[in-house]
Image (cartoon, one colour):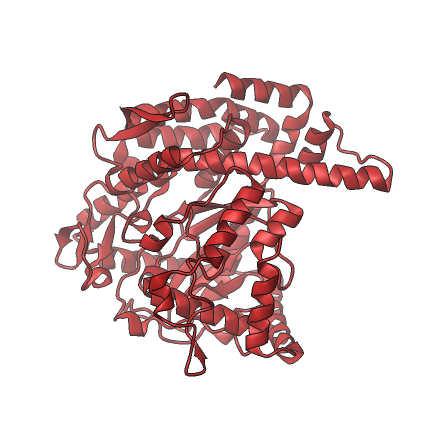
Length: 544
């Protein structure tokens, strides 16, 4: 903590702390469409919502039924949540009797064959997205792909990085093209170093996020029909783990035996890109058996450990917006890390848009803590320790006296286990100076209030979302399906009764129309065959 204190003191002395009032945030939120009976929708992506390929705010993920809402970047939390509300509101006006499932874990899914893969039109890029999803179905099955979550995008403003690079608090620019080019390169590298430090520390502390915001302690029995699992019967229609926080992040969710052997290196942008590229280029025997192009139809993009970068499942990712046809790893190496994407947030069924302001403020605190604290390189042993802690918390986070493994960096060995409560109290206590600083620069008391709410969850596990879900199910004498369906119906009524301003409605309709026009233009501009398009893409991807 002394190191963090010193860092915060230096930031304050140089006037850099004022930039923390303008954190850049964005949200990507997934939700399944279900019919009036709560069964996974079999209908195509509603045309009134726009083209999934090109709409900036409303698209699909794995399935035609799995909507993904994407907000622009905001520096004001209330504006970010309002944007997410507007997207939900417009969507509900165009769902024709369907509703959005409010939980991360799906419910009534009538087999793999009833999970429609997303379609993106006839363009090469659209076909590539669909073929990629066919590969996911072969490799992992479709059920896993129906699990929904929230991705939280985070970055500090450019002014902060330029001032930090210069060693002062001035937000101006140096004169001269040569100096500017050198500064841009230095700032690019500085950001990447800091953001990868953040990512390493987040892996070390991500178990706490699973506890505080895990909201998937139970699941419909239909989801696990014919699958082996270690869950208990909760009722005739639901399985659960008594102390679980996030089954979404457990072995039942986004996990893969093949990916467990992929050694992704987070110690630098070049190490990360090289290790990810190696996984994309390494054939995997089980995937080779599927074939790639069989009888003229593509089954997957390639037979390798990963088809593309997005296939790698991780609780956090370094991100850079790629140019058209550019791979994410190439973009990272050429222009550095632009922001980080936290991927370990369950949908909160008690918040109509799936996330609330307290969660966002806590993520601000934790990510700044990870950014400004010491962050040594992570070796395999420490990596396994961090993964083991996540596994323990997602399955048993609310168990009394749960122990976590600790890692002694000097000896590079695991040390004695400490209880979850010890570790959580210590980490949350370390965040208080940051909460005080952010309240100071934002002229509020919101960050301290958000932090106190998380401290209360550690002292009383019944306040966690996972415990609240199980308690409400018990009070309602309801199965997981009945709880989720009742909540979804209340959210549906909430959005349908809300008023959208004429300006917002007009804007959303116009964007949907433009997205269809852009898709048509992309399709008409294709000149390569699909085979040549893929060959060209992977050739460029394999170059640094």
